Image 1: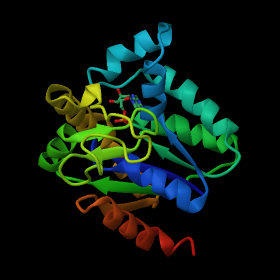
Image 2 (image 1 turned 135 degrees about the horizontal axis):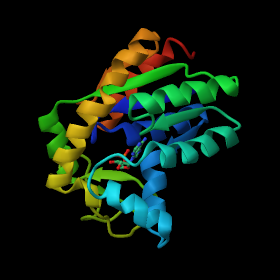
Image 3 (image 1 turned 60 degrees about the horizontal axis):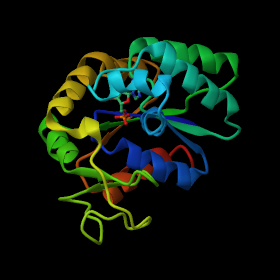
Length: 215
Ligand code: AMP
């Protein structure tokens, strides 16, 4: 079983992708998380990535594709792609890669959210740099003030969750990623889910929608 989870910045796709991967026993392949891990190191690749990620713009397709190609090729179980594909070129390349490996995407989960809500969520989002769990200082607070419930370390704000970068990410999403909705709708793979509720409610909605196919 292979999924793509699609949606704008802050729609909760990372959190939902983790829940789905646990529920179905499949791998969670998140390009954003992979990049953030690389950014914690000091090397040529991290210096290159920083120029894009910190500004909220897309990393060149060749770099992204090298990484995702290895991940998919090595994946022995199903997977959920989170943050990839992000533009038409990546989507077409992905289809070619999957075809060459006799794999298919079963469903594309599209989580939609208004821009106002996106901005509110991203600027109040905090993450644990160790386990990557996401919190929200308004709606999904940690038990102790800005401390990860699981790892007990101080939460951080992603550098690209600062307001100026958030605007840029929304712009990039609208021009580069939104056309994919139509692409997957034509393939009859798209499942639309409102991202407005809290994590638990959105997850329930996802299960209801895909449950029909995977009972
Ligand atoms: P995310 O955690 O998915 O919001 O990704 C954080 C940042 O990583 C994005 O703003 C981009 O700079 C970069 N990134 C993640 N996935 C991709 C991708 N598929 N293509 C290009 N850049 C990406």
